[in-house]
Length: 83
Image 1 (spheres, rainbow, N blue to C red):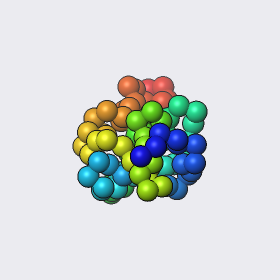
Image 2: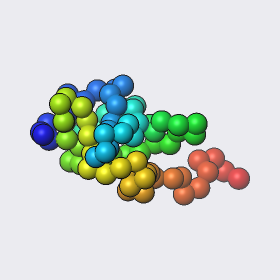
Image 3: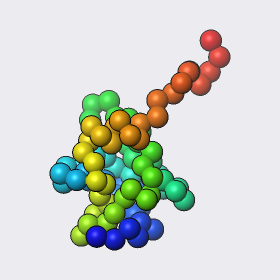
Image 4: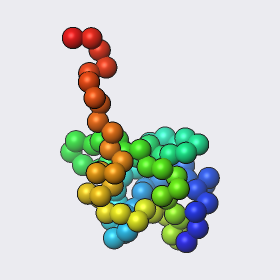
């Protein structure tokens, strides 16, 4: 395992500790990855790069899907437009 995450690009699949897919990297930033979850109603997760390791060239985190959602989902506090 390595914490070198500079090689992670848009379109990479992020896996959980159980090997199951959590989502797809939608954008990369200096300190986090924006990951769009798989599913009927996808959500965005803001995954800190320090929590991502490369296992056999596959971006992986040490949590499962549910824990990833609890830790890294940032719902809007209010609508982005005036009422």
